[in-house]
Image (cartoon, rainbow, N blue to C red; front, side, top):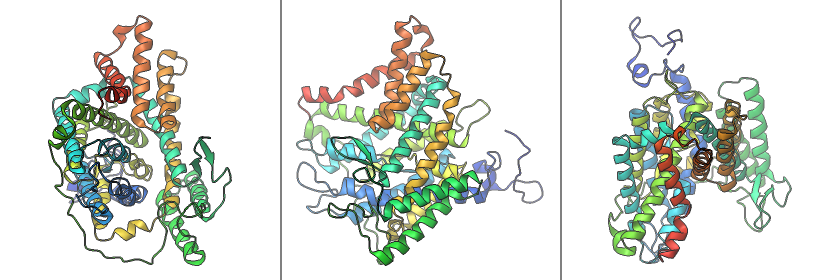
Length: 491
């Protein structure tokens, strides 16, 4: 790396221990930028403290019990566990992986566990969390044996770029949908606003935040992302205090989507950590049988495996965090930390925990090292007793940052050679399938399979890395795993 970048100095020419450990100057960053980036990442993903409990905490398993074994939902316990596990694992990723990628509960896999696993006859929440632990252990073995890194290195560079571009479009769509700017109208698909119209105070907050962010970014304002979130939140609190807009509902479609920005709440609560350790390692084998449990572990494994790959590439490309060979530094440590995150998520009853693509928000605001993760993780830990603080930030205020990050990641599309159709078509499939199917994993699978098929049918099978054949075959099994489970009577 270049040595002409400004470096913090201590005791003459000695770089501080923190700077040296996290490679802050080496990656062209500073402690201030890392702190600001870590805070921006937290603000962008703090919604997980509210949303994860609503997904895994508000649904009963096949026996009629909720997460934790009770007959009533215990959302405060899920929120406290989510804050604790996210904080610890995010700090672990920063200290061990030295990478600015925060870790928390995967919403996609949380939804899959809620609506696809615990509803199976005989399955309990403890059984499902046991499956998550097993999947994490297998993932850790794959990392330590080098198999996961080998697959990552076998992917052609244009496909890695396409993964990043696809994620950019995907998170821009997530941002617009979280804000209610784009909505699912049911049979007609997606539509703009409510019934095709942009109306309501929450949408105004989103648009104000979005265009303020665009203007500040184009003017090279440092801290633009953080300023937009804080400014929009203050404006939202002011509007809510005067107009009492309230939450969105069937009778009030123009209300706040998830979080009502108000200061009228308890600020200190004692944490309920009763969910920690509530998992049954082999209970699923007893409940649904070996074959069905194995298929579920395989599905979780593959989705988690490539979600991390996509998120790593997205965060790396967003911040140009690469070594002299163009590779992501400390990639094995990052993967080990992620696998430990999955194990920790299962043991803490907060679902699969993995890298969060919202980390690109912090990277966009300057984060380049694991020190930003330490900041984000400490803020998560603070919300164990200050959960209402995170709940103050409305989704509409934070979602604008995802749209900007989507734009930034989209810029990399020019690095793909679109005249080379043998790689351009798989890249195209990767890019479009992610937002169209609302899944990073689906996009990666579509691109991999298309790449292998084109090369093989054109007689260029020797140009394909052997591991690409393996992963393409795994993705084919992944895409048909549902019908297989139906045929076996396990879903």
